[in-house]
Length: 509
Image 1 (cartoon, rainbow, N blue to C red):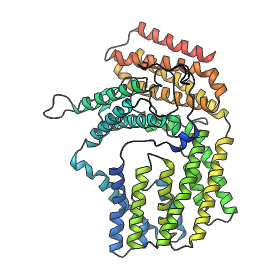
Image 2 (image 1 turned 45 degrees about the vertical axis):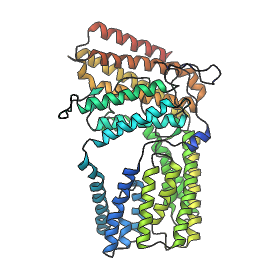
Image 3 (image 1 turned 45 degrees about the horizontal axis):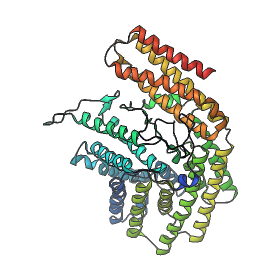
Image 4 (image 1 turned 30 degrees about the horizontal axis):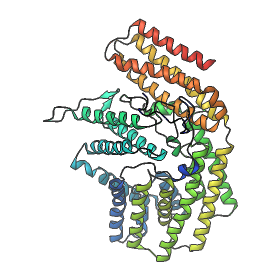
């Protein structure tokens, strides 16, 4: 479905179905990814740490206060665990305080359910509707804002899936007393309406397979706005783990990059005599953990440097103020609060507060300030150099082979769906095959976009093959959506198989 407003011939917009173009470096560096308010969740995370830590202080356990994990990132907790082991503390005592923090975080996190069991889903849909309405009213939305609203749309669909309001491309039946419609039908229909309105307001939908908005982050949105139907849920975790067990899967390639960069940063940190080489290892891992492409990964590295430099500066201010006991607790809670606020918005802002938080938790307050600042800055710089070097030196052909692997997986998923249609008594029985096919098509789309940005020459030749796969795959999914609960006839299956065969021949040529 095309946009109601055609592109201007002088606007610089690529031709229909052209490979995508990437936004500029400044747009990548300054983008704010998510417009939704994160204050409620951030406040709960801060309270989850502040309450048990305050109790520990009242009971006279000043040092143990730093062992309460709260809602921290798992990698931060793991890094802290290595230092606890070095200090020779009782592991049972450490585990007990950590469990206390986890239990408190669980209770506080679930507390809002007492005021409304389905309030998270309702709030998510309301927030999406407001964001889409604001986006549609903007005559010239930026790439960053497009990504914000698309992220919110994907998050809302996932919330509805996880809450059981949608399944199999349609709403479920959850009756609300004294209402004429079910809660599931209302939420799914409102979300789909916002989905369609966003697609019609997005100037890229229908003219090309655009990825400019997705390039603003290394955690892309797996959704196709040109599809105006209720999407299918994600495949099971077992399926996603199984499909990642391949040399050219995204997960495996990201793991190799992380391993090489972390080893390099750790060895060089030890060789340089740093007292905390684990900081360099941690920083390298955080830059590469999502398997970003070269451009977005380089931006993430810059975010890491900028955020860490400022974050160490914030710690220096707190160090000079001599925070301890209750003032230290207040500083920890504030850092945790703002880390949760910024984590879905901008990585540099997140690193500013998370770096301060990690230094405060690591017991760096009693240490000489100059040594701490210089060592941390040096380790972060070293880690960034190692991670960015791995990104740019990793063979470019790997991304091409990854894309080709997903082409093959898409055809395999189409074949599995056709086979199920031949034997099933109802089209509704092929739900898992439809779900897997949608996931493979979205993954193949993302891989094709990445190759188009990192290997433009290859993408120019192979882009028509990507479009042929999309057309064939979505024709199968559209047939299943329209067929409802009936049996597919042999003639229909033959026509669908011919479509898939034509697409395979196109990709083989």
